[in-house]
Length: 290
Image (cartoon, rainbow, N blue to C red; front, side):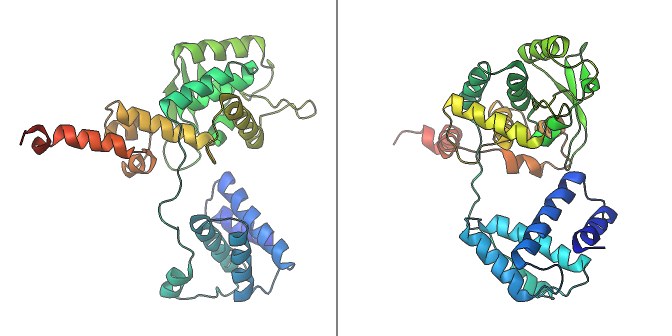
């Protein structure tokens, strides 16, 4: 059994999702290719690898993630981690340089995306509309099946890929109409997936990579140049919009089917100018004359 297979068995035993398992294995594989060996890893190997990733432009938060994955990889191989104690691990783990950049789409940008999507083919437009109205991750869109759509209620079943519960999301009338038109006129009747790959030789479920390329193309048509504004930018923008419209944190938590209300604070993007206006409006001293 090679090192990757050994790591994979440990991850499966720990109950990791398929998506997480694949991401962890990619890190371990990249690390081994960098070190040009499969065993006998040392402290210097870890330091060199993380230093190289920093040179490539990776930030502290991502380096910390790599550090954690490699620690699990070492444990799976029964190789001593270079920093054995809790204090040492905390001291040497790369840290985030301030608040991480969290791109999100404002309401005008979301409308630009929908307008740009209307210029694309029916499947691609549907992908952008689903991301905008359901706040789904790309993996969740990738996993959608035809049976997940309820025509009578105009709802689609979301199979969550991270923390949280699966559940129904209501579609707006336009997305509902376009989805039903796509299912009736475009989709292959014998295919189980809701969205099919456009590759002729691979007539199956659309890949997450293809989803990203479609979303990137839509951003280009819309003229949106925000860095790293992928599907999560729609997700953050949607949650921020709900919050701005006065929907409470407990209501957003229930709608998103999160287990903790703290997730709302991670997703909402508060504009300093808006916060200041609310403070001025609410505080009695701002409403008194000298």
